[in-house]
Length: 204
Image (cartoon, rainbow, N blue to C red):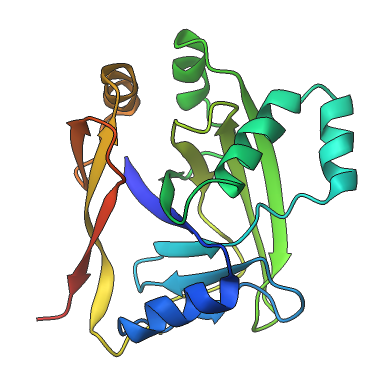
């Protein structure tokens, strides 16, 4: 498996954006109007998503709960209300049906939902993808590659060109699940409860 992106939760989006800019990253808001996230793009298509909230309005949350997705909403809200820092990873998949991954989640008794995503970025591009979310927020989700945008010209003053390694702290059950998905060479898996640590790849 390949890392699609990593989520970094902040209490204030503007301050979170400035935090990464001070470290030499070029950061852009996810949208021009009322952004709820900001993005650090890399040339290979991976990115860091700095997120203040999950984008769930009260109406949307209510509708999802009425449709039977209450546990999914609760998991997302736990992350939104948690402490600042890296909170979740996403793997990338070219198969929008998630035909390989779905049975693995089911085997591990993890309920999932496929969410189609469509948004306009700050440059006016319409980006589309699909995400396979487990209701349990402690597990990674799977995302198809975005269509409709390009990150080929993503450049950072500090020379960062991608995500190198992630020190990822999980339970043994979660580690076994990731191995069932196929593992990931970018993850250094540790059994424990420490926050994940992201190490970036830089130009030589």
